[in-house]
Amino acid sequence: MKEKNNIRQSFNARALEWKDGDFKNLLDLGCGSGEIIFELLKNNKVKFAYGIDFSEKMIDLAKKEAKNIKLEKKSQFEVKDAENLNHLSKNKFDIILAIGLIEYLENDQKFIENIRKLLKKEGILIITVPNNSSPFFVLDYIITLIYRLFKNNFLTKNIFNFIKYKILKRKSKKEIKPFPQKTYNPKKLNTFLIKNGFLIEKKIFNLYASEWLARLFPNLLNIFKKLEKLENSYFKYWGKNYIIMAKKIE
Ligand SMILES: C[S@@+](CC[C@H](N)C(=O)[O-])C[C@H]1O[C@@H](n2cnc3c(N)ncnc32)[C@H](O)[C@@H]1O
Image (tube, rainbow, N blue to C red; front, side, top):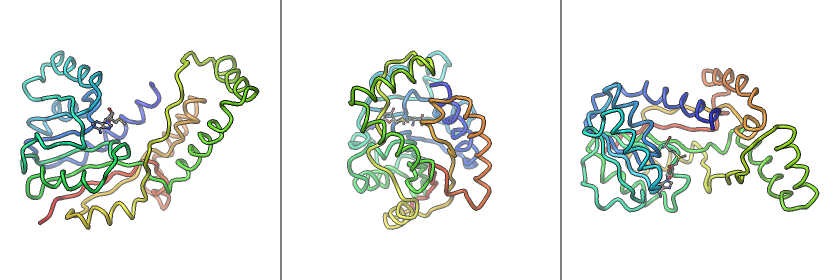
């Protein structure tokens, strides 16, 4: 979705600002179509990037794009499950990204142990999760819950459809995506990373928006974009997306 991409891109821009080191090998887990990898390669932030995603469709898109923009020698994409990374060499990566991934995984403990093995000494992990203490998250959750409760009721289903297709003139008949299986409390996630041998170097919040409302009323996107300024205020914790940069320590 166009609106959503804009939000994600604003995140990507922020993530790029973080990297001031010279990273050789990057691993992007749940890389999707490789958008972030290509940005990093184009900006010479990394020398080589591996992208892993279990969606064949996404990896195909990434491979095609790598060819189009002549970055296939600097990148490698594979269809693999991020919960089974045994095929990758240990102590290989200077930096690992897990952007919008771990909320879909079954076992965070196993995942973080694998990450530690793959990272070089003092390697960097950048991870993003849905922040369940954000009011925007709570708002989206309530709207989704109401939608789910009523979507199968004959009358409300028709009302929803009338609003969606007739008033808002939506064309897509796609089912609204379910919420990520897991959400995170920022403090608990910090503690989890520290316990597993990471030093938290940076943490930021972003996405001061209700994606649900933005989907229904795209004009709200301009207001939501302005709310990104909350990041510099007391209300920074309201961001729906929590981003951590952590360093592997002994
Ligand atoms: C929200 S998207 C994020 C994509 C990309 N990281 C970005 O920020 O644009 C999550 C991605 O993780 C992938 N994914 C989810 N579970 C996975 C798993 N167990 N192994 C590999 N990829 C997975 C999905 O296919 C999807 O492309």
